[in-house]
Amino acid sequence: MAASISGVGVGLGLSCSTKLSKTLPSSRSSGFRVKMTVSVEDKKKNYTLQKSEEAFDAAKNLMPGGVNSPVRAFKSVGGQPIVMDSVKGSHMWDIDGNEYIDYVGSWGPAIIGHADDEVLAALAETMKKGTSFGAPCLLENVLAEMVISAVPSIEMVRFVNSGTEACMGVLRLARAFTGREKLIKFEGCYHGHADPFLVKAGSGVATLGLPDSPGVPRAATFETLTAPFNDISAVENLFNSNKGELAAIILEPVVGNSGFIPPKPDFLEAIHRLTKENGALLIFDEVMTGFRLSYGGAQEYFGITPDLTTLGKIIGGGLPVGAYGGRKEIMEMVAPAGPMYQAGTLSGNPLAMTAGIQTLKRLKEPGTYEYLDKITGELVQGIIDAGKKTGHAICGGYISGMFGFFFTEGPVYNFDDAKKSDTAKFARFYRGMLEEGVYFAPSQFEAGFTSLAHSSEDIQKTIAAAEKVLSMI
Image (cartoon, rainbow, N blue to C red; front, side, top):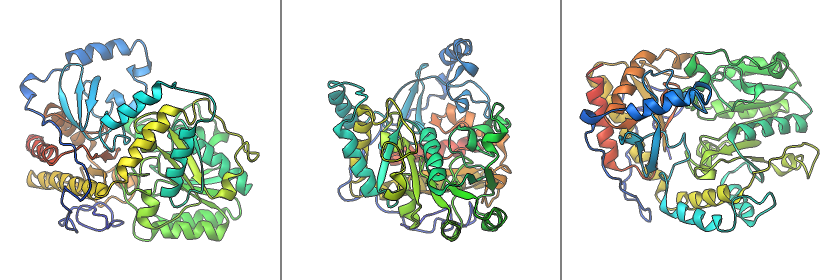
């Protein structure tokens, strides 16, 4: 499947000067079930966030900033954070009764749609047996077999409870296996909030305009080296100046935490070559891209097999989950098979395993990724066309069910390019779209997600809303 980056093939940055480069398939691919959603009615005249405001004011006295994850506080877009009440399919409802077409998808997991009936039914059956055993369960074997058969790099897998946990574990493993300590990460790539990764980490840190984080000791990040994404010469220089000292390179193969940024042609292949030549491990952080770009993730999509991979989000079907895996000889370093220690009370719990199994079963059905590619392409091209029609600098791109756009002419190859985006304009656009019943991520520096539950009507309503809002800002 060739990628479309709003007019050019994957790897040429986010440009917007030409039309989509491929013919998109029919929305009714053979064997694939599409759940149509109830359309969002025009609620602007009744739009109110009074109950959300009251709830958030109370929350600020109970939780730091009133939230349990920073981007939810709407710091970068302004206005009133929204307190949600329920979700179904491609839609969300807040406690004031406002309805939204959702392009956040719980930050990626809801690829088959929110509160899917089959997933909920399977969870209900599993709950009858208990919610956590603290002991092995057969469901772990089932999901492990599905992950191993799908993801090219994974011969053995360890389940954990979050993407952050997965990245913590995989870094410790890479250092244990190589006997080295230094790490290369890329500016604007986010690998969770563990100390070694909070160096030029993009995402929530960039959204809030904070230093990467006070409280992180210098010793924790001293061995973390950084380079701009898509800059292979910078990576070569780091290898040359740290001969025999680098344990691994970790990267998002498609960046989702600086907004949506794809790799240039041959960038991933060059990274792969450098790690092999220097005895370092290549780690793909596929917490976001895993099972989203294709069933085998970004590594299947681009044809590059890393040594280790982290996963999360989709493999838990909306429940807390993470995983890391890779070549058997590396994974056998993990306790109790080997000396590298990592543990977790709720790891592999039956509820997360059940939701993941059901989600992956659905994703394996024929036509799944063709449908995601079709609707996401229509969405991105429609928003870019609306932006150009109304006189705005805008660029964007997508691969399968993952997308993004920036209020800048582009192209966007890395985090520095992304920061050229007009974030004040994005904030105005964002608040306008909320009033039109469309929910994007409340930050310019986050990717967006579509799902199998999004209908063509959802997409057309979103494009129409975007043109309306863009004509007013």
